[in-house]
Figure 1 (cartoon, rainbow, N blue to C red):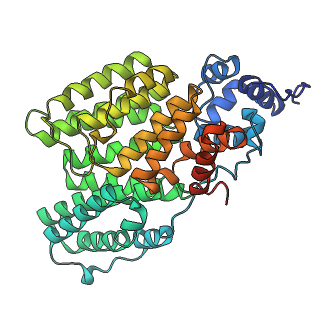
Figure 2: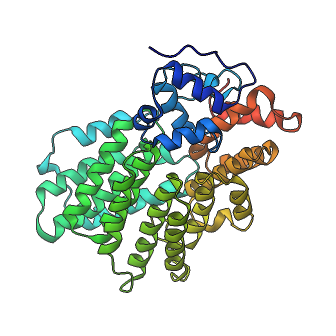
Figure 3: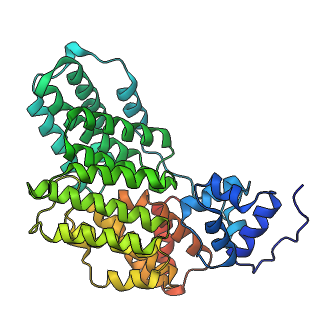
Length: 406
């Protein structure tokens, strides 16, 4: 039986509330940690205040594990139900599912792998250059997936491996389209299909690209900590960074993936060790930026802010951001995502005005990336009840973009 305990009062901090709801549920720290993919020590760190309140996706998982229907019961802020934070769904998810699951029409396969590669490259350029990237690529993805699958069945030898490489790139794009939506199963499916296609292509660069996106899936879900490090490390070992600029870029990307995974676990030394290796490799690229993965010196710099945040050091994240240009990556989606991260650092420092300004910039760069950002939704929802008067109108405007109010 759960122990008899007193409910927290209105002013109780997150640490006290988490401890209360865990004990009310009759679950040990080890059980709660296991259910959300973390250690008992991590749960203890939250309950003692040594660690700050986790990011929104983890808050939602904790609420589900502890049977808490209103996130405000955990956060202590204005009443905000899990539905308030629910993920939006773009309109073409069913079309993508159907393209991945429908029978393959081998007879209808396009004739030219070269033309297919050109179409995939075009879709990626559209994704990175549009303010509304999901709407822009939605008409392209189902046909690209269907055609790629058909060509895999119709061709053999080198042509089939070439198509497999480009089909993996297509699945990555579909994975990004489905990310931060309710279609978790589609995100996992596209990630798995991408890795299978990359392995069939027998191309270390394709495998590294698949490892990067698989790492995103596992890291955001708080799962497979050791596995995601192993996948990225194995992919890095297949690359020959001395042989080509592209392989050097992917080598940097794999060490960045490992750094992010260690940061998520709070392993400060390991995170910065691999980040330094990623930085050194990126610095040798002489301005090169990968055409669809966008890995280059600018992207590595952007992720320093995320690493500081995951290591619970928002002050250092703000300091790092002061020396980093958002335009360092030629991608609207990447720039918008980065600006939300910097806004998150300021928000955790209690600077609502700076956070609102940066979120407004993120929205102007890519309204799509901003409107699907769970972190943006979390910050704006927290600000709504008592935004500073100087930015109250801006907060409500951002809330309308995020569909938090009408």
